[in-house]
Amino acid sequence: MIHLITYKKNTVSLFAGVLIAAGLGLGVPDAKADNGQWIITKNPYEYVDWGSYGQHLGSLHNHTTESDGADDPSKVIDDYRAAGYEILAITDHNHHTWPWSDYGRHPEKLGMVAIPSNELSRHHHTNSHFTRYPQPFRDNSTGDLETSLAEHEELGGFAHLNHPGRYWSTDDDGEVPEDVLEDYIALFKEYPSLLGFEIHNQNDRYPQDRLLWDALLTEFMPRRAIWGFANDDSHNFNQIGLNATHFVLPDLTLDHAKLALIRGQFYSSAITTHPSDERDRDETPLIRHIEYDEIAGTLMVVADSGGATVPESEYTWISAGGEVVQEGGKVLDLNNTEGLDKYLRVEIRGEGGTTYTQPFGVRQRPE
Image (cartoon, rainbow, N blue to C red; front, side, top):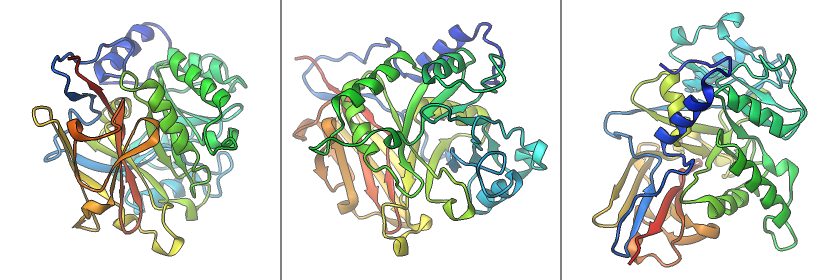
């Protein structure tokens, strides 16, 4: 089993081994081939058996009265369970609201997975998962982001950045400023435990973060994946269910949830892409099947919404630079798609919300 690591002994080699096994890079070479055709070299859903794996709604950024939330932990847990969520991280500011038994709730009895987490917020807000960090380094969180990332990485933890758009704005051309991009590139290069960041936060407060996602994917893919998260950042009942992480797992356990986060074996969704009177989580697309056919050179993504197949017109295929390379269609032909480079990701719009795949790494085989 994968257990919480609370002291750094032997964690560096364990940490690197987990990342390499998950295919997240650290110098792992791409697959080799030799005929000039386009291939997918990183597929976050490679290990998913869509016919047998379960899909579990998760929420990874939430607050209670243990920090600045309106409701006590037991109510937040109960409200998320009632909303159909099975995986939950309570991320109070610089405070571990965990284990749930301290608050009269037991995840195994509720049929849920509790991810030990907190939001480190004395610097760029960052979710730290799967450790009791900042212990044993100190009792209180540091004000330096890089110190936090380095120390929690020593403990075997994994992190994602929260609402980066709070800390930057687009330039006069509506693009990510060069200095902003350079700062985030440096962070992701230095800290492999930094899995990604929020592309949706709460009521879509920072939509420019999807520009940042494409800019960073263009820099790092296909060798280094950066996962996109959609989180409620809930502080009260009305913010529950705005966004979701959909875990695709063989079994609902903490171990499998952790490995899914490392691999990108999840997808994200938000209902806040729609007008308030049209938002409906039941009408937000659920991905039912993803299939890569290397021989045919095709990638297929199939989703339904409210029990009905999503029309092919509602799929948007995006590649390097955030360029839309195909409007519509459940299948993309890699070898006949103009503008394809470095990665592919898919946005699927339903009647009540929008769903985002994680990025697929692509490259052309040498002639």
